[in-house]
Amino acid sequence: MYLNILAIGDIVGKPGRKILEQKLNNFVKEQKIDFCLANAENSANGSGITIDIANKLFSYGISVITMGDHVWKRKEIYDWMKTEKRIIRPANYSPLAHGRGFVALETSNGSVVGVINLLGRVFMKPVDCPFRAADSALEALSKITNIIIVDMHAEATSEKVAMGWYLDGKVSAVVGTHTHIQTADERMLPGGTGYITDLGMTGPHESVIGRRIDCVLKSMVTQVPVRYEIADKDVRIEGVIITINGSTGKAEKIKRIRISDDVFG
Image (cartoon, rainbow, N blue to C red; front, side):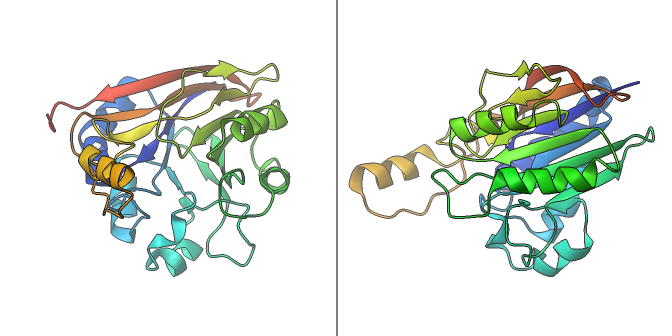
């Protein structure tokens, strides 16, 4: 038995949410997707997530929401994350932090998929070691399933690539998030792990990584602080489909996807 797992790149603001509402369900049916994860740390006006937004994303067909360094922007989710297991934050935050860093959920066909969320340290605020956090999460998840996807939310390409090699043969796939720019380096590593440095962005692409071009240019040119507003044109869904052997947990194929919008103009 093979599973098709869809991993969706960073959802940015209302445009990113809207295109998922309009396009995701049909795409899942057409591509026979068994499980869908998405990074949604920018889904609430570009920073953080709310309970209402998370529940809407679940209703669109997303199985697990992963987060990143903006996870703590909305205090309303703190206590909720203790009980809602479908949303996870980076596992290498303090063990005293709200929520959990990995989860295992059953799909409609009875397979169990594990998801681990990690946060990079290069050019990022200090956190615990993502490599040791991965080892700890794997120790727990490997007792439940051999189908495991890792969202490595990091700035540096080198750190994501290193994590891919570190986990090769131990997980089904390592997918990078955070930069909002989809990379063209998807590949199968020798041990059967699918890899891509960044899934890309689900949001407005006529922008500077999701923000209005004029706001960003004004800030960069004048060096005066400017409120970055979410852009709204050329909206796309970006990510990958990973085909996994359900018996071995090894990935067989990883394919980039891009779904354009015909609503936002």
